[in-house]
Amino acid sequence: MRILLVGAGGVGSALARIAGRRSFAELVVADYDLARAQRAAAARDGYEAVQLDARDERAVADLLTQRRCDVLMNATDPRFVMPLFRAALQAGTHYLDMAMSVSYPDTEEPYRRTGVKLGDDQFALAARWEQAGKLALAGMGVEPGLSDVFARYAADELFSEIGELGVRDGANLEVAGYDFAPTFSIWTTIEECLNPPVIWERGQGWFTTEPFSEPEVFTFPAGIGPVECVNVEHEEVLLMPRWIAAQRVTFKYGLGSEFISVLRTLHKLGLDKTDPVRVGGASVSPRDVVAACLPDPATLGDKMSGLTCAGTWVTGTGTDGAPREVYLYQVVDNAWSMAEYGCQAVVWQTAVNPVVALELIDAGTWSGSGVLGPEALPPQPFLDLLTEYGSPWACEERTPAGS
Figure (cartoon, rainbow, N blue to C red):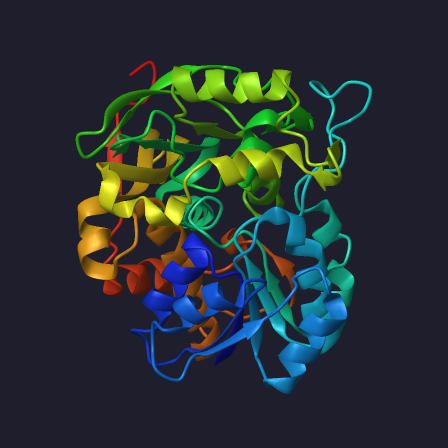
């Protein structure tokens, strides 16, 4: 499979290193910064590096055609989803991303009603992808991605009826030498944490709430322990109800009080905004300035310690007719990912899942046309191959509420 990987930041570089150990993958690594693309392409002999502006649909489509690529793998931030998505459609290739097209809150009641939801712009073109006979696999990272595969597995194998699908993300990671150093893209983190969180409920559909609402203490496995989690806007809530029957779908993130305080301060100061402002003779995006002032998450691995956990908490009725509650999850130790791949845990955990998906597509095990989420495809082959990659997962039985 010939893959155009667009984006050679932390996740893109990790993806190149993981794919470099699998025989199916031939990569063309593209980035606006050619030197960064070259560093990522050095993961394996034979990988190519090219300079590319992800906003230039024509250039992206031409590159896909010229390099005879089978698929565009989008490892950029959500701003670039739609031009890359359209370019792949134009070139007649498959497409994968790890974050979906951006949302726009309702202008009148942002904390009650949805406006343009995550992924709406992509699903609007689903018929064209079906007509082209090509697959656009949206949200195929870890969250969204692996969390959606877990949800499909729970629906197929563990439950006869699902009450809640609740994605829960937590960690005990620490970064030495920094008072504040996010372990993932601050641009994306601001986007998902400060937008109105979306919840789905049967009978009501999608609706929004206040940022950081409904705090709960969730106990994570592997010694991470109890972490306060809050509602955050995330793709799973927009994907899972399309293919899986449930009473409720939520996403909650263990951010911590200090992180939430910083994000609220950025919002109050307008530093979360993306529209450029004039500073002297230049125009700059406040959010880009924040990102430039913080360390690149890809460079933090040797200063990080601890574990990160991604998973899906599921409640409902088991296949035996009794109440059931489980947490399907994957834990990655930063010490392991650094020693094995030279990548910090969060970016490695994000990057491994699209590589697994690409290998399944190459083998014909996963197939389809149109715009699909991971939960639209069979979960067991994915989970089996993920384990083969040295990235095991687990299912923890929990005591159902009221039992």
